[in-house]
Amino acid sequence: MVLCLLLSGCRRPTPIPKEQDLLHIQSINDTSVGKKKVIFVLVDSLMDAAIQRGIKHKELPTFQYLLQHGQYYPDMISSFPTMSISIDSTLLTGRYPDAHHVPGLTWYPHHGKRVIGYGSGPLEILRRGTKPVLTHALKDLNGKHLNPHLPTIYEDLKRLGFTSGSVNGLVYRGMTKHLINLPQPLRELVPLALPFQVKGPDFLAFGALSNPLDEVTDLPDGPVDRLGFNDRYAVGVAKYLIRTGELPDFLLIYLPDLDGKVHKHGLADREGIQETDRRLKELLEAYEARARTLHDTILIVAGDSGMSQVLPKDQQPVIDLPKLLQRYHVLPTGETIDNSTEIALAVNDTMAYVYSLKPEVSLKEIAEALRSDPRLDIISWLDEGWIHCIKARDSASMKFKPGGDLKDPYKQSWTVHGAEKILDLRRESHAEKTGGLRITYGKYPDPLRRLQGALQSHEGRYLIVTAKPGYELAEAGSPTHPGGGAHGGLDASTSLVPLIIYGTDKKPDFLRIVDLKPYFIELLQTEGRK
Picture (spheres, rainbow, N blue to C red):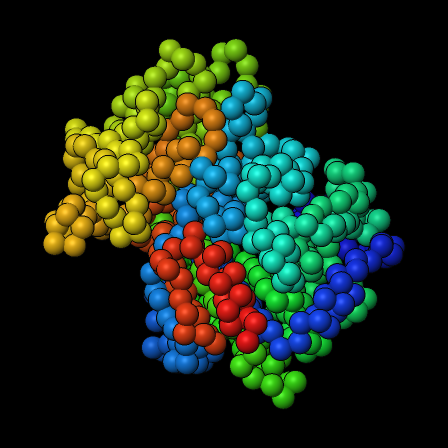
């Protein structure tokens, strides 16, 4: 879409209807003077190692300031799969995919005709079709796919009497009506009927597609600026709201630029996080410009997922899933399922869903075909209430299900049989406290609950397969990153993200993204009413 829109950058746009977001925020804020605000900055692919390295080299003064004056946790656990679409859905609903029903960046709807993709790369978009991808990403994700019976934080805050806003958040469903639109010359190139209505928080800035500040302040939202889906736009919107005193009670700001740098250059990249540091500095300076400090705001900064370093191209880091499954009729990327299709694939970087579309093709049979490749890691599937797990080139197996005598650090209970080494589980007795057994986790953070969440996220018969660190999965059209970074997986490298809390001594009950929603609401209900 962006490549097409670049061609029309020299054409003069025509006016489009303006949103009423600012007037709405102003009218509500007039009755809520003195409330403490919460700003949550979600930085795509922010990792602790990059922060520590940058501080060591004196390259990140803003991060250093926030760490010195706030709380810092380097190991908050992300959702699974570790892809932004699914993570954001977990963040905003406070539930895993088995409740919010957004399985990943790509997935196959049971009895559907095609695999759903929200747009992982140019070749994948072309293969799936521009119109279907844009329809799923701009209309269906928030309008249909995200469980309509599960409230988001924006919907809950509205009911509680708080205002909220989202700047470039991919998932934004709320209760206030907004228009998704583009100027006429650009609108002609987009294969969708524009404008169309969506529901979001009180304030919704979504690049050039929904810009409440259009003609109010100058923002980088033209074709050469990715239509506003960049860090400068996101921070520019927040700066305006801060300087004018029009912040909603809760504001989510999504910063995407770091992700692209790490995907391309790998975990050694230093330029991306230095740029993130400068954007955070701009937020702090926006307060200083009003001769105020952050004493009336709680600022929280977090990553959404980590990345694993992908091996160079000459070390065969890309695992061709259709080739591994060549004994079956695998649906080619973007094509429609017919009577001969046996397997469909939904690749999410280092993780993939593998669907059996024929009852005679058992999941265990597919798992045995996959486990021959030593570059693969965990292969799991659901069968009669049990989640089965095996590893590549390993004859051992294990299975587990919720409920039982094993308690984990997150107060979840499990029954586990078999080789617990597969998920690096460890048992220890804590009879002196509860009279039972405790299970702890090693290289896979919160693996039982996160695997369960993904394997029960949507209907159908499917496996989950993950690649070992250093490798990534692919089918035709999938973006690959030899020598760069990739996420999607279950292991610590892709699952642990930093959390910075500035302006309050409170912290979440557990250091998991799934626990942030109730934490944000608690902050507003306690410190926000002081």
